[in-house]
Amino acid sequence: MAKPVIGILPQYSAKDARLMIGKDYFDSVQKAGGIPLLLPLFSGVADLEEILGRFDGFLYPGGPDVNPLLFGEETRAGCGDILNGRDTVEIGLLPAILRTGKPVFGICRGIQVINVALGGTLFQDLFADLGKDGLGEGVGNRMVGHYQKAGDAVQTHSVRVKKDTLLYDIVGKEKLLVNSFHHQAIKTLGANLELDALAADGVIEAISQRNHKFFLAVQWHPEHLYDSDRDMEKIWNAFIGSCEG
Image 1: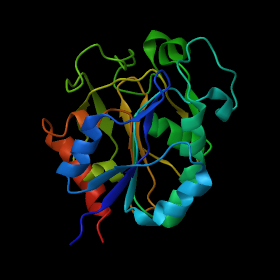
Image 2: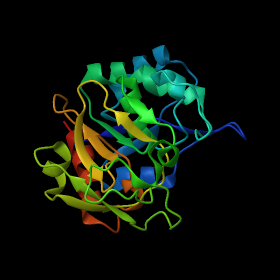
Image 3: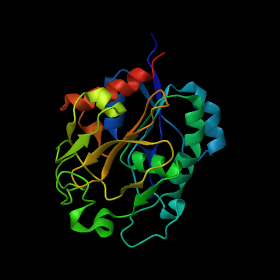
């Protein structure tokens, strides 16, 4: 059986005009049984739509902040770097990807830009927007460390997984330990999105769509945890497995 080919939306360094991707994204796709290929960024959405049929699944990786103008807000002081080229391609391409019915996996920025593409909104800066107490919806409401100082593969907080969700079906448990490198997060959910997991302070950590073959996005970075955490391995294997056949 041929290995599934995964189209990865690229990261971009504006400083030296370089397309790139973190090695752990490629490694995780390969370890789970797929072949990773980096998509172009500045070819235009129409050109990318023409090649969607050559891929078996799509990965939205981490990166800079989403432009708040795209979800109806003025940019505030807490908002970080913005790359309009990535916003344009990633948001513009998602409807075409969804029409193919092929699997989609979003990570960190990926969960945010996917949510905006489907009409949702974001907190531009969690501490500025929520203060130290978070949303008060979790087990305790003191804000957790969403932008950790520890290394990439260090798990620093837990998330609560809701039953009867795609994420629960994959991991089979109600609590995961995750790493965390973000200061933006979902405020209101986009169309047809389901809430799969929350941090202890109520911040949304995972979303899915049930009416899609595989559609999952998480706020943490499972690509750094493939080798050290069986639950993260299960997530990658479920994504790549859904891309086969």
